[in-house]
Length: 269
Image (cartoon, rainbow, N blue to C red):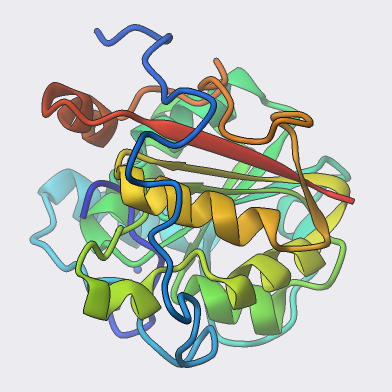
């Protein structure tokens, strides 16, 4: 995969768990990727039925192990299907943004530090990444981050109420490049509708990918969702990378390979 992976309850933690900012895709798909969707591009099992991620396990460093053991009870949230009040998780009335897949957590920590008034609920299943983000939370004194370990679709479907999120971020999900695996892509009509239903009016869904065919796919999916409007304007397409989205290690790797990065920001209408 090219970056952070949507979460999966099949993995458990030990306790439960300089590229220029102007490097972005142009405002329209490149030649040959205007539509990669045929004949029934979005057919397949409903969201939540088919796995949209690779399980990601790894060996914990002593620092990550220590962070999980000490900090998970304070900052961790198991994805157990029990309804939750997002505001209650943070103990304040600030806006809550859900980040699906955070890798090792460096970008999450940077965004949380830059916007202390925004609460970030970050979800993943990569145990070393969870340990690393917990360490960063403590080291940087980040009181506005909570970590959910488990399947992001379950979190959205069963645990978070409608109209409760100020934003949803999906940065560099697995592109599942083979045609037979396209049904496993997270960004599909069912997910777009689910995400829109959990956003408050005016809330944003921000996706980014360095895989051009997936960028075109995302654009077509999201523009087809009636509850979402493209912030790129009347011409549609992609937006420049916002300054608030840090450059990630995976993004640098993709750019080094000649990939172009697409950012898509859609607003709940």
